[in-house]
Image 1 (tube, rainbow, N blue to C red):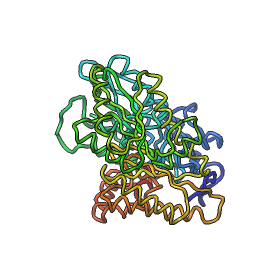
Image 2 (cartoon, rainbow, N blue to C red):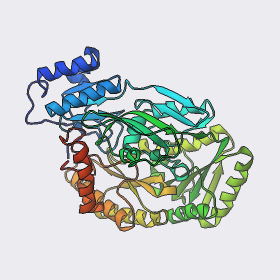
Image 3 (spheres, one colour):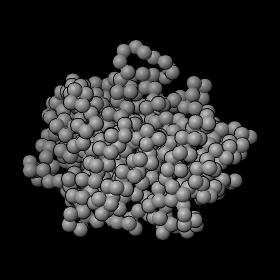
Image 4 (cartoon, rainbow, N blue to C red):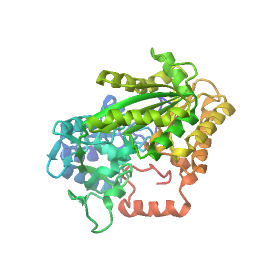
Length: 477
């Protein structure tokens, strides 16, 4: 593992760049001199992501079309140059890191919303469109794109597709792959293909769209996305509910859904998270509150108050300490600000964070939290939990100080135990963040040898020279 703030220095590094001068000139002919950089300061900007691990690329390219990307991939194959696609670089597992130097291929110039079709409820976009900007654009015409990763203010739709991003609204509306109807993709060998299309149905051939969604940039470079839209809900109602235990909060989630109510969001924070928020904000909550649910429902305005009151009645016997129902947009925003303050508040615990995103069946959330608490006690390190209770997606935040000898080793042992615990409860190591390089070593815990071989066969067939985002998902890739 590379320590935060350090760079991986590859032994074959020659001068400023590994690529030969003739390679740089050939790439420059494809994208133009203004859309290529080998300057160290520029390359540093593309060397890291949210993991804070850093690998310096040899060159950064900013292509402006799928044709240019096709030519780049053809050249890269001929010269055996690794290519690392990159959106906003906001990932938590190192999926966009240029671990072998080579080319970082940035999609930031491909940032156009090409079409919003109000009759067929679809949109066509380029991969560099920022998620929130796209949502705002479709909402102006009364339409709705539900996936809402925490990084939506700066993450791009291409990156969302590559990682199959989720978010709080997934409990009701699903994840990114549920809204991707078709793609235009440059293959690892430089071919330009389309998958799927603008229709809601289509079963001709293999479903390559679903294969590429969540493939972490290892099977193709997305250059165009066809997206399914929904009608924009008329209104929403937000609730903050405090419980005396995490068990009561988890039981409340199951009780709500069992009563045929599917909220837009069901976010939870455990007692340790609540303590962090108390210290970092002016949030006033009773001392006996040990868990929080943020519940939001959407739909027709006339039904929302009734639905919110019904939810309050359903969960009241389950250890509710206090319920706050927002009556205005400002009150709703104040509730969500509590959730948004969590990440910043964790830095008061310790300076270094490992953010894992396990997912377990909803009913197993209390048991998983108890296991995590036991792990924290065993290794004497703080672990803070919050996430999406509606779909069992827990963000496990292992907080350490890397400057203290032995802390990093304890964190790594704790991470593996957290993964094993989630798998024992029928869950998965990652619900949203993907594998990248951060979880690659743990793949055998979840995926059988036969299933892994099947996936590697697909990668080898599509990328015979292993030049597109090599080393991601599988360490021997």
